[in-house]
Amino acid sequence: MTSHFLLMLLFAFFVALVFAMLMKDQPRDQVRFGVIVFGGFVVSALVLGWLMYPLPF
Amino acid sequence: MRADAVERVDTGSIVLLVLAAWLVPGSGHLWLGRRAKGLVFLVALTAMFAVGLALGGRLFPFESSQPLVFLAAAADVAAGLPYFGAWVLGWGQGQVAAVSYEYANAFLIVAGLLNMLVLLDVYDTAVGRR
Image (cartoon, rainbow over all chains, first blue to last red; front, top):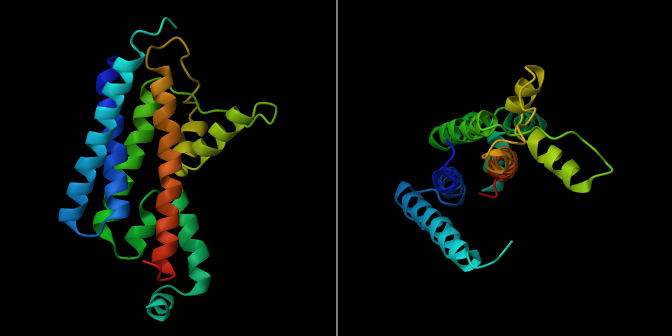
């Protein structure tokens, strides 16, 4: 797999999954927290990517 | 609450518990009867480490002259048996030219760091803090 975007999604999935299981005990809370963390990763990466896009290095 | 936890896992067993939790991701939670968490940690962290290896990541050596490499090596070791298994098999040489090299290293390092967080959670659970 050479797509950095897909690798970022996979990375965010694993980290969100572990964080959710660590931080919350109830399944419903785990799902909600996991989705928030995963979304946070993806949105942050996209925003930072676009912000860095004009940089010449 | 704390007294109950101590009854569940005595002090002497805690060292063994933490050691097991380090070597096999998720085993500490399985030991404490938290099956769902244990299985998720076992599968997720092992898979994360395997993905890192498959993508051409490097198991960093302990080089005291390069602090960041040293820290990366410590994070790799934190993954437990997956690290030692890969090391024995000669995997994790690192394909620097691979387009996924940096991502692969992130997978390997973060798998180890997450295992450390899991280990702390096991300890907190065993002593009744959670």
